[in-house]
Amino acid sequence: MTTLPITSPASSRTGVPVAQSGRWRAGLSQTVRAEGTKLVSLRSTRWTLLVTAAGTFLVTFLATHGALHHNAQWYQGFDPTNQSLAGLAIGSLALGVLGILAICGDYGTGTIRSSLGAMPRRGVLLRAKVLVVGLATLVIGETLSFISFFEGQAVLHGGAPTAALGQPGVLRAVALSGAFLALFALLGLGIGTVIRHTAGAIAVFAGVTFLVPILFDSISHGIARFAPELIFANSIAAVHRQGNAVSVTIGVMLMVAYCAVALGLGAVLLNRRDA
Amino acid sequence: MIVTRGLSKRYGNTLAVDALSFTVSPGVVTGFLGPNGSGKSTTMRMILGLDRPDAGSALVNGCAYADLSWPLREVGALLDAKAFHPGRSARNHLRWLAQTNDIPRTRVDAVLDIVGLTAVADRRAGKFSLGMGQRLGIASALLGDPGVLLFDEPVNGLDPEGIRWVRHLLRDLASEGRTVLVSSHLINEMALTAQRLVVIGRGTLIAETSVDDFVARHQSDAVRVVTPTPQRFVAALSRAGARPSVQPDGSIVTSGLSAADIGELAADQELTVHELTPMRASLEDVFMELTSTTVEYRSLSHDHSAAPDALPAR
Image (spheres, each protein chain N blue to C red):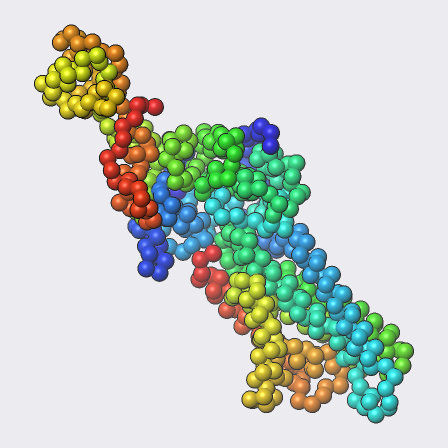
């Protein structure tokens, strides 16, 4: 490195050169903008999205392709919408990880000290992350859900019953599935805020969303249907609900409650703990 | 202006910071000095609101950090550990930081220039050397052009030229009227950079003073004399009430009389003097002695509590 200037002319003590924001103090809008920049300026975000899209569309292709050319009995109760949204299970995991990275990326690298130095009111920082992660994954989720639906229907056209958005319940299933992906991301964000370590948070996320409820299902029958992944697959992404799946309303309420608990606990711990 | 009052922090059974009260004033570089593990970083983290004190308070410009309206425009900090994501470029790191406090984008380029990272600004920070990472940390601290600056071991990982640059930067920042607190475990580094000192050991305050005062107070009054007639000189010194001792090299080191007095004495008694040198304990020795009882992790092979060796004045 060459010889360096010591200070620039701009750094004299008189007149702090700041934008004329007219605001009296840094708040949510500034932090939201910054969190948005943080999210898009990381290569890992782009990689996560690429893998999410590829995985989602691949699994949807496999699921719908496997549903082609069966006999009439096989198609009893067949839900072409649900079949074409099968790939979103991958999306739910990947976007959950995105939510986890939004906070654990800060902790794992020490960036959290910069984040809290710039916005010491910790609740504001978490709210900004909720907004940025929630809005970004809502857009991504809806995109994934609709593309997955059309992709699946195109495959099913080759020799199976198909669905159209105009049919009863289909648009609801597709649109709500997209929104549900955003809830998975927020659940990941909440769990990440509590756990603070990426690997640990991913393990807890996977455990909470399907592993543990499925394991416990053998002891207490029927408990698995309250697991986020099973609510998603059997209630939200379904036009014809099967078996003991919870209703769409209950499913949404449960998932919102899970997110609220995780984020609430995260907020309490974030405020209490040393950074 | 930074003011701490009774600041305390406990980790498990360890009292990391113990009722620490000191004031850091604007316009001078204040060195925050203590051995490793003495609580410097913890104290700085409490000032920045990252760690919650168990007791006491730390105020910046009369405010708790969390109550500052625009934290980055009032306080800039470089912490000892890295505080940026290795996957983000230096420019993007500074960009999002600027956005949090409505700092204009032009300032990002300005601080990149100040720290000399413009050429590598779009490279991922994870590829940076320790010194470049340190410069990015300094750029972050300067971003909001704050009146209060905290630097935790800023010369860590810097090459000699970088160290010189940081010294000048710190002094310039202070001369612009800013409050500058710099932690270090190296007193010689602080003697070159700081005008005031806050010395701590095991989380408690040892001294809060100016560097000159610190040196003067702990200065030994020994004087070294080289003479062709050591025996006669020692006898004369002893008669005059000094406490001389002959060194292996034949010179005499004595305390109890100033160099001027010894010169007068030599003239009166017609003793030949080849050399007459006031001696001063090195800062490092003074620092070692002061903190030896408070060092948390002391190596057994070195006994720092031994009397300081006297060295010629700087």
